[in-house]
Image (cartoon, rainbow, N blue to C red):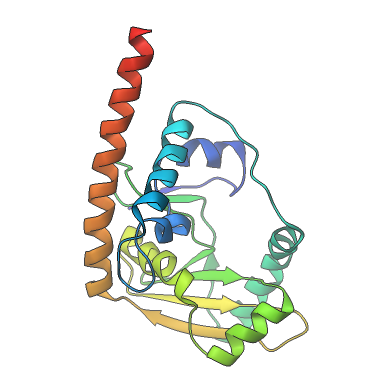
Length: 206
């Protein structure tokens, strides 16, 4: 595991992650049901990564609720630390190994074995999460993928809303899911590299 200590969302953070599949987007490669994502969805994500790799800079849209979630995150961390007596270590980007082929940007690392993913959704979405009492399927690839990247054994998922009860769930490492994810990631990276070489050759020949 290689940790890059920079502020998440900063220019350095974006530069470090450029062209690299990240856990927040693993669902575009491998779904929460343990199956490969659609070929069209994988291809779209691949093209985005190749464009990043080649230096394209595009503004990232943030909705009102996404911005509000960022503002509430420090409050959520304080709640988590008080509730669990765990210290949250913030990091920028984490790569699985020196090859830097896959990454994650945890909301926090806990001790030597754990991690933290925080979501601060709008009220109706949070209520849906509370009623289900489990990690939403769309976030399973991110949570399990973060454990794959970091090598950790558990990950706490916190859905936080300041006016409603929180949802805090500890997720254990699922090695069966992770093996499937790892296979799909490997194939995805190989295809990305092939397409990057093809595009580079076309660009140089022009």
